[in-house]
Image (cartoon, rainbow, N blue to C red; front, top):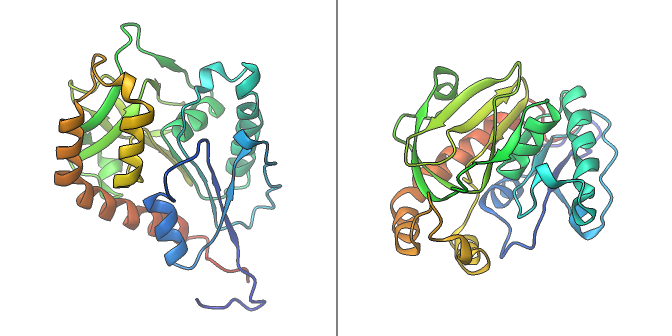
Length: 248
């Protein structure tokens, strides 16, 4: 690790929303790269940090909650997270949101997040179409990405659409950016143990319209995960590189 002039490590906050089987691939990579990764779990009652604007970054991860139902008593902490997201964006802190995280960012930006009217959801690997802005961050047409979601967002005003899905995915919009904020509807962070956890804890969703079978999910992970993880590591390196690890 390269020391700054004061030798102070800048924190990179990761906001989690459920008890995952192991630290996800993104968190593992950032720790290996020397970031001071600090996990915060508001769903357990932990307080969100006060942002000063000099943080290395913020990541808002996925979870079983629905931002459209944040007023429910057990999800009220999500309302505090919306204010936290707004603060991070106002302070120009590099921000990445995954699945629920992307939906929260979209909500904070005034977009709509909702279920499909027909109840269809995505669970498995699906191909994307990359927009020119998405190709600038390494997304490519026909790239297979892992989805696991029953809600999705409309594109917020002022955001750039990076990728859309093919017709076999019930949720068309897959990624957007707004300045230093990146929102991913798909899940590049999921490791094999986390996918196994999905299939156990959320197995009742398999078989709903739009979902893939467990065997299809397993085959997809075997075939496509390595490429997806390589893309994700590169994106995280690039996204947070503009805000150095260490204070100056």
